Length: 169
Image (cartoon, rainbow, N blue to C red; front, side, top):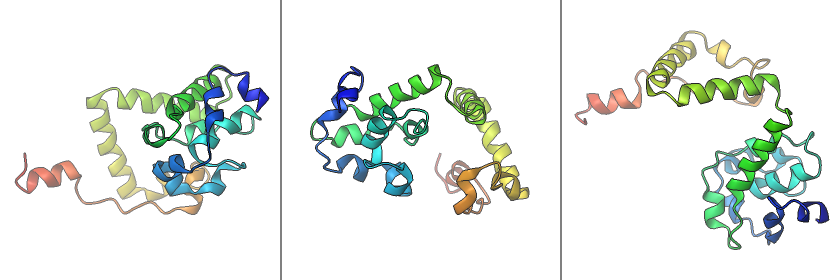
């Protein structure tokens, strides 16, 4: 606790009363469960506290969040959880602890999501890849996330196309 108290950006997390509200509201936690956090305190609050003990070992935890802010919204003691997670991400990046593949993926994702035209192209391209080459996307060596999961079947059309086709504009 003393270590965290000395970190001005993260000492607010010590106000946690372990009520579980952040975990119940977190879409990532609901999907992954508590064991995936690998430490005593799971969930969004654990993703703030745990890297303070061993940043090298727990450098991925701040990235196990969509940063949607639901955790901060429901926190009864008003801990700014999503902002602290973002701060940890910055520290991990500044200290160059990110896996090179993850770093490249984040750069590509940032580029794609910053351009509507590029995003539309990428979604069409990925739909094609998933339809014709599902093994590429669901490659257990390249994508560890897929080791215990199956990719969903790609729908015949996008939601946008379906919506337009069914008389909505």
